[in-house]
Amino acid sequence: MELNQTSISYYDRRLARTATCNETADSIVPDTFPDIGRVVCAYGVASIKDQSPQNDRLLVSGVVKTTVVYQPEEGGGLRRLSIPISFAHIEDCEGLDANTVCYVQCSVAGIEATAVNSRKLSVNAQLCFEMDGYQKADCTVTESVSGTDIELMCTPCTVSLIEQTQVSQFTVLEDVNLPDAADLALLHTQCALRVSECRAMHGKVVLKGEAAITCLALQEDDAVRVLTSSTPFTQIIEMNDVSENDMVAARLSAREVDCRLEPDGLLSYTIGGSALFTVRRMQTLKNIDDLYIPGKQLHLKEEKVTIHTMPPTTQAMAEASETLQTAQRASHIISSTAVCCGVKQKEKDEAVLTTSVQILYLNEDQQLCSLQRTLPLTVSCTSRGVLSQVELNARATPSGEQGIALTVSMTGQIAAESRCTFRNIDSYEVSESEGVNSGITLVLRFIDQEQPLWDIAKACGTTVNAIRQANELPSEAAAVSNTMLLIPIQS
Image (cartoon, rainbow, N blue to C red):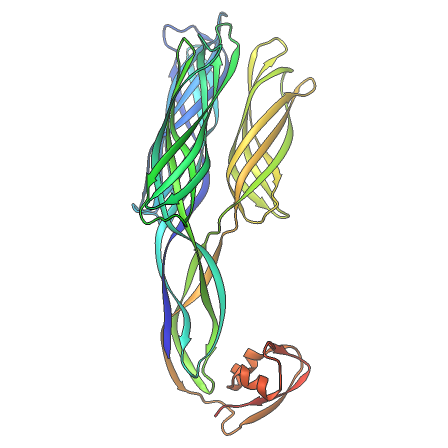
């Protein structure tokens, strides 16, 4: 008897999680600024400075660059305060160490600024972290056992494995002359990095994408403008051992965004991006369901091997609507944003998104106002699996006397991941069976309820083929019922 074993090396996704945290900071209004009358709105952009996997945890640290806009107590134009908020988030996850390949995307779900008094602000930042961590895994699977007397039942199982993974940093630089943008002051910058093409060639990965920038800018008359810009980019990343036929996928996140608007309307931005590359391969393994030697006792020393199979994701798209109540009538919507802070799967192909929404609008007196809400949105998903990589696009319109109609469009990826269990046989022993069929060469048995031929053959110390031949059963017959069966016993 010979054990035919296969060694497998792949990257197991140990961490796949979305988490939120809150960070606060107090700030004193500078002496050159007037007293606070009313806080109008607050925005923030997160910059990741470090992400370190170690000792069953992931540490993510950085700073949130917040901008608070307020109306002075004695009137006059709107004022802007810049308040940095440092953050450090620890995510516990068993199996992480310094060699874990980690991807982190940090989004600012909302900024809440409160005037403690006319000279002091308290700012709270709600952060949302989307985290993936891949750990190298090695295992051995026994796919078959060779031997003239062995009866073996195997089932082929195709798994999709991450053969390679790598995180690479890149930078996108751009200068754009925006029409009618002279003498504007930046309030907030939002950046989205999207993949348009990702392909492998010999030892390299070609990544093409788009950096979409959306800015809120304040005019001298306190009106807020929305500025947009889009920059295509191409990056060639070194990645050993990849070839043209490999299935390569990329996920992008903006680690840091630095945006400046010059008085002449020149918009300059520097985006520090992070790309997670994964190389998949398909492999078909044989899973040993059962084995025995007719007329013998087989003693196995084995272990169960669990492999995380990760098929390529499929795209999901959905839309949800909600009416939000306001304390005053909204006459005009300036901007609306939405961030997904968590996903909970439901039955019947539905998912509930915990969504943080921020809407900037003008009331009926043409005053600038901000609305922030966290609400659940139910979306339909046509495919089964875990929904992740969610990106939201919010659209808002005034509704009635004190309402805003909100529509959120979702795009995401559905992963039908699973854990497949295989057998790895380390050693075996064969001994004589003390069966009750000693000296008996043929058994006649009536089979009432349906039974698999395999179970009958194993229990009686014979083979499935021997039962088929003795009863003239077709070669594809796997079970019998309500029949008299001749069972030849092997000596």
